[in-house]
Image (cartoon, rainbow, N blue to C red):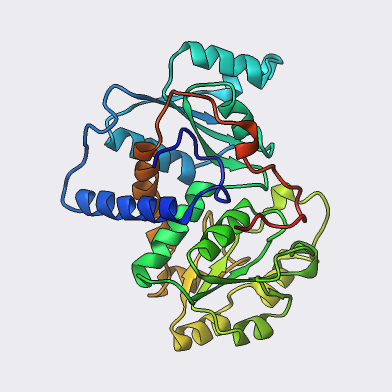
Length: 326
């Protein structure tokens, strides 16, 4: 039950997901007992190929690889030949000659990690491709939820915010549904896709969404950089209508709901400052769990062998098109 690449969530079987979550638990337990490094990937190399800026995902993968004893190389895109017009294909040919074993890719173009995977024997991990997918974020989200609900079937997760441009919403909702979790979307009508699976309720009003009785409120970062037009009047108005204000936090606390956010947090937009001190906030847990989950993914993948068939990778979708579901 191994794979060469991790490109999306939709193609994963439930058994594979459960295996990765179980392995993540094992790695977390191991490192909670002061074991800082194991030789699982000794002699292997991991290349970090980030065309977009990242702090959490990049550092999490780097720490995960080093804890598995792999060598890590950071490819400096800003000072590479890419800025002189070198194509991605030419870059991959150069990297292939370096005999790297794993390539962790983040890029603004949907589907590019899949294209790279078809050109190299290295295991390729999609660390975010445009508004398409972010599979390891989905896995760490599911892992964080399972720590609170060991059997998450029937639990409800309300995802709030910019669903339209969010690769996190696409990947996490797909994975949670595979685990039997109910998912709903809440956001401005302009930021919630018109075409979503019938199994995902679509709300535009906060009070109506809360009447759905979620167990977890998952806030998405408002991604100004991916919005080419104004989707709402102002960030102040967005916070008032869809954000977790102090009054809403009091209501959430009374109901004992958990709060999640993939980060980085826009304080005063998605949530008020008090959320960071809320006892049922899982935001810090998500950051911590990212390392264990990414260790499990690196340990699971098998570099080399045959290239994956092109049709095995889910075609990227434009923002606003239906979310991939099992």
